[in-house]
Length: 138
Image (cartoon, rainbow, N blue to C red):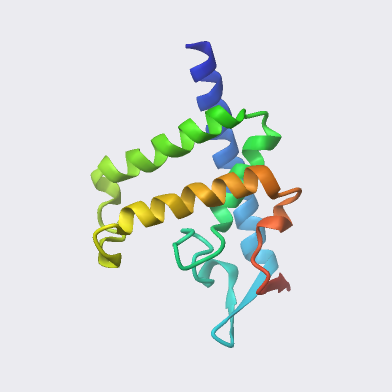
């Protein structure tokens, strides 16, 4: 039980810290989408990590912060899976579940989200590594 409690606490902290990093990045970066400048928050997939995007910035930052917080890979994988499952069964999230992306929309979105978290955990050396290449500091 202590390991579960520790895992949960570290992942909650990682998520809170990732959201703070996201707020900073959203103010600091401008992106190019379809030939037009847009804020990071409007860049396709930057917030949600949608399957059409190669990045989910917030998810990547969560993985980055999880590693910095000492989260083990098993904890990361379990927390990642449980969070995505919770979103599926929680009516609060039903409005935006990607049902319009076909019968496997939720599954595709979930795999993309989990992949972005793992990429942040395994590859990001700094928060800037989570920013898409189409975005630059203002």
